[in-house]
Image 1 (cartoon, rainbow, N blue to C red):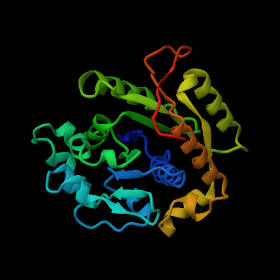
Image 2 (cartoon, helix red, strand yellow):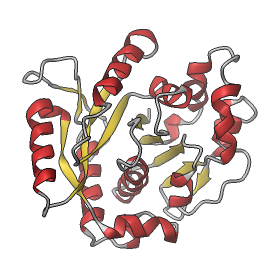
Image 3 (tube, helix red, strand yellow):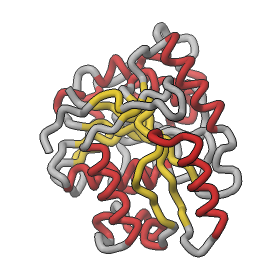
Length: 272
């Protein structure tokens, strides 16, 4: 059964889509079958893997107008598929409200396809609305990108509280995959301070991988390809290769334990 990981943070500009696209691509290059689900109406993950959305999209899947399998597109990487988004998704938050089981629409749809993949990565919008709720309700775990800047922890408590609420009311098996430090500037003492503070406070919850501020990560989307393909030797690309290795190693953490007591919650079961 494919492992479903949401990439979420209600704060924008922290590297969610960059992480979703490049982690998906790096996992596929490591021999894993990966489905990238674009739950953001801006559809940046869709264009980031070189796919032009046409119907059906994730919008049609959520509204019950098409099965998930019909919305899946193969990318230029032989083991990477995408379920594209489109601007139609902007209206889904409202259209989903009166529907029965609105918070489980994505979970129910993915049941038909998840077994075909080793990993399903979901790129969430920068909010804690119904689209993100659907993603978290469908997921085994959530990966949280954190920008290495002063306001990095702003909103993180709210997100973790939301995860805890979803665990108790909607998805009891949901755990935190980890916190990923992004946009790290080695020349900036503030980046080092933020990284140290996050590691000191959250300890085992933080990935070993740190994603640097890197121009290739910013350039790659304009070429319609992940940075790990656009420039595999770039520091940012190498960071996402390292992240993929951590994910394959199965290091999801149960954040319900105290800061010094967090333990690995489960393995992926995927052969290395």
